[in-house]
Length: 213
Image (cartoon, rainbow, N blue to C red; front, top):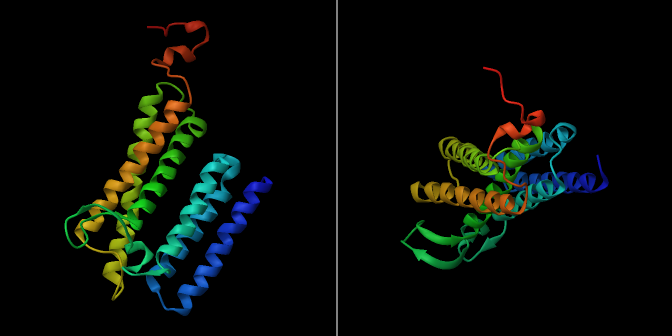
């Protein structure tokens, strides 16, 4: 493991320990569960680096998300915890139907990183390097599909715990919208900057030899 990767791993462990202690002493069972989730994600990401070869940028992005996520449930603002903080009134439909909040920024950022993770795996682990826009499309919707797990975890918290800050229907749908938005923006921007397009897999065959009938 490279030095920068060790530093990022240490930061994640520090986040897990410090916020785990904080939420335990404040009996915030919802975010204790999230601390456990971050611990699992950290173990998976850094434990599989020899195989996945995730970039330092992806690891840094996940580390930033972990910190933002933990701060979101602990820092108090005029609207309650930081996750509920209303940044700018792009749209106000009343109640939870509000854009733009801190929660939505974090969702956008996280699934932008997750989209890049899937793009990385498709290109560099599975080895699909033809037709970059098809690969980008798959990465975007893999990320959006993966985000459903996030909403299931929140639903489980609502069912199991007597009180949570998860929110209702508007919150869930807005989360999914911003998850997709983050994936689209990150993957398309990165795809525009990298990997020349290849429209056909025939280019990967030596001397463009046609397949036998």
